[in-house]
Image (cartoon, rainbow, N blue to C red; front, side, top):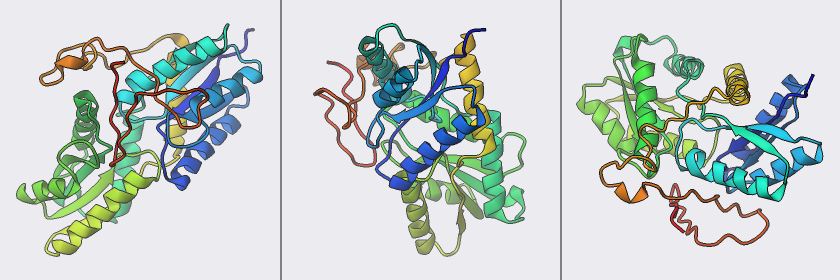
Length: 305
């Protein structure tokens, strides 16, 4: 009986200590639930430990094979480019290791159920048919990633009886939260629940809540509530293991059919065929230049080196 491959969890990274700690707690909990597996986790940017350190930790524990699962709801630049490039770099650093790469998490039906639960908690028994949901995603310069949030919104609407589910983004993409709320009102919304499409607490979900409160204060005639992030729910723990199994068994389907790096989408033709570069993590060894970061709610990527 060969040992099963280890599980490597890859996170975005956040400037928020509580958000980073929530990720690290989640990785520890996965390890507790699956004592048969070596489990480690690291971040692409902003918070320790970097992904490379997590790989080194596994290698030092004798791991030769692992499956990497991105702890991310949508497949944007991180999941499509930075993580695969970082893993390729780790393979050069640690000759003899092999890995498979799993899919991002959303919009999985079990996560939609958690979102529905978050809405129920915020609604406190209100009639769903009078409620418009504003699902707020992270926002990306990648149109396919933004479309994934719309897909989640549509799936959340189907069969659940809400008046509507609209979308907005907290960075890098329109509409922003106030504009999204304005749109809900123009569509006739009487009660709105703003639902952050985020796994854990952090700077961006905090910004969503703050912007919602500011808008609500300026529009007292509309009832607006904020729902909580998904959080480290049992469904999320189970889903990561499902993605792990898929990766181990080789049953993988990345959303490549509308990927800007493969297909010329209007206005993004210059991205087709670009090589993917690892994201620079401030705690990584070595010097990786040319990634011009501009932190204003998000960051820009320069993929062509």
